[in-house]
Length: 298
Picture (cartoon, one colour):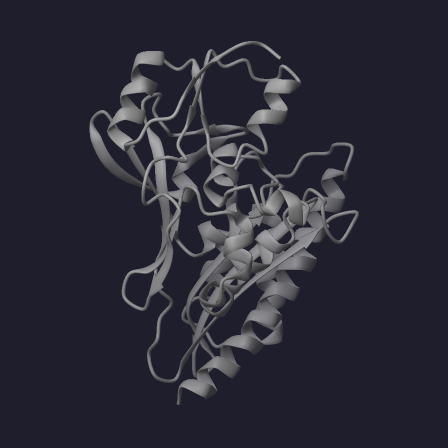
């Protein structure tokens, strides 16, 4: 392992100043499940490692009906997986992190770290994009907020500046109108049920009122360098009564929106077909759950 300088800043301002001084040669340590392995294997060779675990307030996981969900930079995937309010209001995210690696890794890996890794097959990203989540960053110029779908710019690439730290992720609260039902579903296809990279993933966030779709987000994972919002599929559903025929049309539209590649895990044609299959299944599950939720709200 290559030698590096090690720092434990006590504040965000101190951490940002260190990153600025290091000029892009430093790596931030939170969970460390990716970083430490990559350093040991010489995939990454940082000159400095900045541990943010001593900065207060970075491990906060909270929810309220107005401001929604807040996931601090040090919140582990296991904490999100077992959270009652995440399971209740953000079921697709809870399911995604349940499928994420082994339980030992989930006790250390952070959701923010998974997003910053910007892997096309990252399980947490598609549900966050479908739910219109945002990344909050702190740097020398102050704080800013970026939607997760804009934050991921390529394979392993994000919109973070060299002196910035992601402090938290926020997700809007689901609608709670009387008679309206919201459901969130994440389906992942791989060669194994768990501890497997997604060959294809589909996240659906669906809101219905009287069987009519009032809002929808459909996001595809592992089919392009960045998460793909299936815009044509969303437009087919939005403001229309949802029928089996319409769901099938939307699934085909999502398949056309995908531009997958062929690799050792699956061919382009297979991935494209699985996009259609998983989108149909996710929409069917989401519709059933949303209708049940709407009934309970009346």
